[in-house]
Image (cartoon, rainbow, N blue to C red; front, side, top):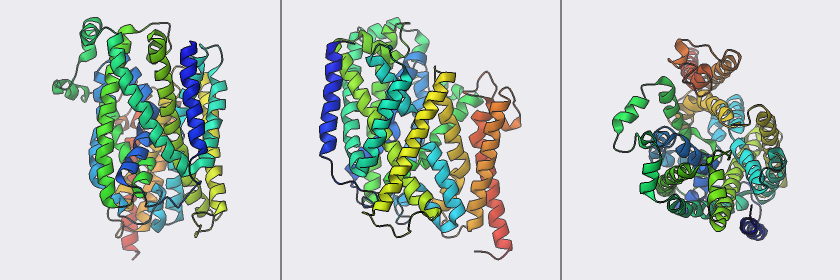
Length: 490
């Protein structure tokens, strides 16, 4: 890496350090119900778009072409649109801060199980991995990824622990700066590749199909069960713990709708920039680089290369802060309280609340760093995708249905037993199918919905685990409701 690149990165880190030193007082619970629509969008976007939405998607666009936009990006849009209308309903369900809070009225068991599922989902694997990768990139791969994962990872943990919501609010602004810079760089990358006509002439024609005008190509994709299931994964947005937390902290239901529209517009803009960046980089790709973005760093002019690295670093910091902050809140607000370790009437400035928040952030971050190191030794080509498939399946299959039809709709009429059994059945079935998917990676049955080993992202049972869990949670939900009604329960 050149002196120019190092100078830009160091300057960005110095500005970040100075800015962090001026952020406001560390707060835990006192930020609740206070965010305006712009503030909501500023914190919402990095909470969900983080590394997968910037770096990883660029790589997908460049390796597989626009078909990946249909599969990876567009699959989230139904959830985005639904959340524009659901956000106000979520905000109106009561004085909640975290997603597991919705299960308080259904008993401690339901709350703790939901909190554990959220805690697992909130491990920032992609963030910690990317921090290590950026460190490697800056040293021309002369030092191991694990070293930078530990150094940068624990720096991010400390930042989150001691700055809390103030630090996270800052991260939202940093993310906008970073992703905006990456957007501008996408234009520069297209020019560097020789312009759009050169890109079209250089890349294979199938890299551009299907596109917006080829809806038949999109429907052909959905004929494959594995592809159709992946498209359904976008539904995880509707129950994402970070999404529900941000919605809960707005000043009014009206602010959530406005904020979601604003966030939606920026997500669409980011998708455009990642498409153009990925295709431009694919045109210039060098087989000597590990990731497509490595090509951009090495082939771009020094100034542009430094800007791209610095902007990527800002996006990673903001996204990681979002994961860790939400995880720390789940530990202090739900797990510690449910276990009787934290008083129910914790005040916003209570030191015990801060302590458990920091414990949660530290535990979540440390486990994630260790997992990155372990998984990277077994599957260095992509240690994060399989992990995301597992934890998102646990969240979706375990609490998806009980959350929507207990914690959001019909919450005043649903018996506690229905929600509790729904979560228990869903988690057991999801974990069982995940476990069987690891033990018998070639196995298929009617439960895998026609997914085969050759078409699965992971294994047929791992791919189908969220649907298996969802079905089991519906069975448990109905059974619990029936038992409760027959026994004269609530």
